[in-house]
Figure 1 (tube, rainbow, N blue to C red):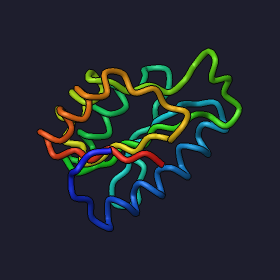
Figure 2: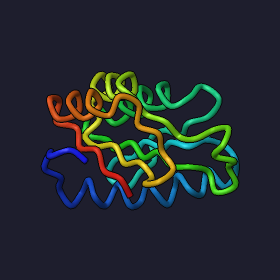
Figure 3: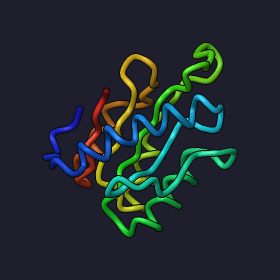
Length: 128
C-alpha cells in the first residue's frame, strides 16, 4: 500500500504476527499484536489498539511491527478492524516500522491521509 522499502526481518515479523494475532483473536482477546524480532511485545485487550501500539513501541524501543486482523469468529457487521490517521500518529509516536492489515476485512479511514502520514514517516503499510 505504501512505497516504503521493507526488509526480510520486518516481513518475517509480519508473518509471525499474523499467526499470533489470529490465534489471540480465536481466544476473543483482541485484533492487534505488536511484534519485534519474533517476539510479541504487546497484545490488544480491552484498552484498545492505540494503547497496545504505544506499549509495544515503548517495549521494542523502535522498529516494531503492528499486525491488525479480524478475529476468526468475529461478526464483521458489528466490529470490523479499523485503522486511520490516529492509528498512524500513534505508530509514529511509538517508532513503529510497519503495519500489516488483513485484506478484505479491515476498514482504512481516510486512506489518502493514512498513506501520506505513513510514507512521510517511513512506515510501511502492508495488506495480507
